[in-house]
Image (cartoon, rainbow, N blue to C red; front, side, top):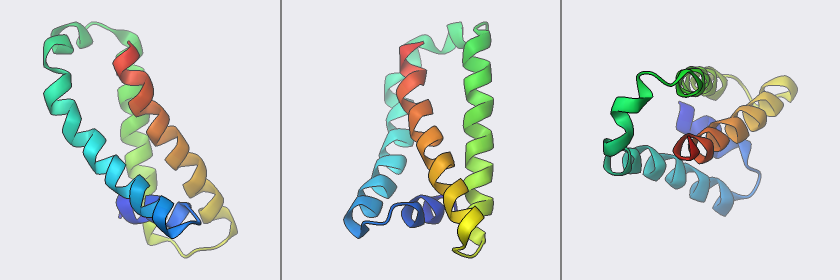
Length: 94
């Protein structure tokens, strides 16, 4: 359902499909790019905070994907989608 919330939060159909594919590609790419930094992540408090923000975004997107397309849920879905993608941009910078 989190992918459906991302797809729904973007008004353009092509943009929604691109965001959906990018969310899956980004998750899969972490397994190839983050191997050498994993030992330092256990001690980095900033990474731990960002990790839990990412987990909360995933849970919220899953919940928002099950909700109807109405005012508060649609706006929340857009905001959480932006935060979700920003976490994937910021995590490799740590």
